[in-house]
Length: 118
Image (spheres, rainbow, N blue to C red):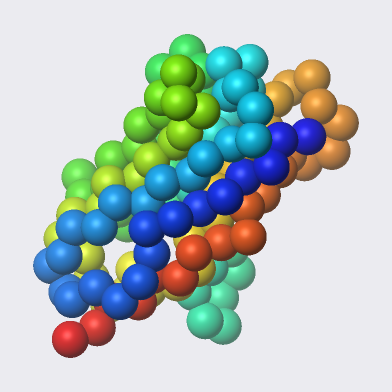
């Protein structure tokens, strides 16, 4: 299955607007679902946003209106533009990919830490 590498995390002030990027090791044009999950300290991993190859999106209520997901099949990337960050957005952000033809639950990146603090 595809290998995923995230970038763009770090320490961000409240209200900041960082952009996360995930690069896949191979073409994503045939991958049905790509997206982002996050895990805050002491909490379970949760969905942030997913984007299907047909354009359908699933965005968590907690980030709706602030985060935007996009995929670039030509560059084999999926990005997460985060605006108006809040301290509760702190966590490890994981890139995710799933093709319906794959066995198993899909592929995950190693994660990138986002810390929102002044």
